[in-house]
Length: 427
Image 1 (cartoon, rainbow, N blue to C red):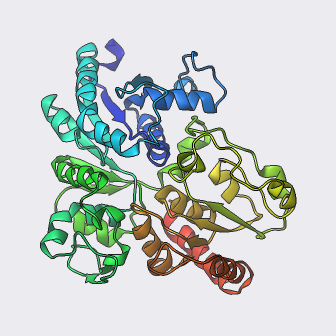
Image 2: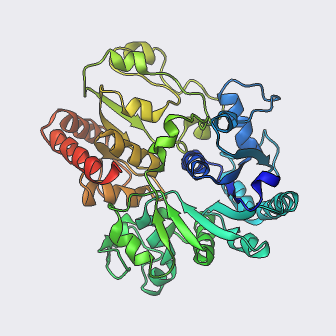
């Protein structure tokens, strides 16, 4: 440990969901490339799923950062248990599991952090944890650590959560779907309709709303906040937040140059390679459809693999391809892809922007509703599939997709995408 005497050392713990794992791993690589030491912590079941997805035996100890270390990055990898057996279905019992992450898991993190510090007393330790956890401030204070909060979504969503109390005082939380009101009093936020706020601000009675409320209270005790967004895209929102705490835009973290030389396994599921099929299609002719990692048929019908009609795959083979999971950036980068029907998760949104693919927005829950506003209304690089409701008829879907893919409006969206990427995201 002598050579690390006094060296800054980040203890990094991500939320165990795909949309958070990706930017967290990429942040670890970026921090390590600046000369910091990293201890990267996956939950044990996440490690297990990653190992299975990448064809490793579940009994094999896999170090996903071994290649990064070989390239000279000081990243130590370990796991921590969440208190549930590996076979426990965390998707099917989502609410129970989320409740445990916020009430039982912190004690395990506390013990883990204490052991890390005790085993390496000479390094200058600091904590980098996901903003939506509710324990970082308590643990950082106990061990006298700098508390770095990493927000993986847009700054607009963070600002709405940060001002939760103010929204409540003004009667806009909880907000009802049948009552649209413009919110125009938040620092750095010009105006936003109540229909565009996150789902957990609509119904405060649900457990997700409860735990996120306390997470946003706790983040006010952080030393500073890192945002996976682009400064130029959300400068006013970030400026408004800087009145309270230092906030830094470090995105798009999924496309930093360090990733060109360090490939880390991040997918929780096996990825199908669509390249051959896509390469057989004309440029701009394919609509890519994905609703992210939290919307899967396995949750609705566990163990039911036959969710499509018999013979469906053969009938659409030339016109369409249905797969379980893929490398999304690889798909969006393929010239055949001309549009993206998306749930507007933040990773999907940023990846589509980076690859220059216009979006059809169909937000489902959480921050996706607010992300849709940014894409369709603020930046105007996509269109909404439906207006103010999650229900849309099949004929309407078909007609909107037809107009989107065939119309001249698509060219305008592509030009704005290209201009936006060139002006704000290439730095």
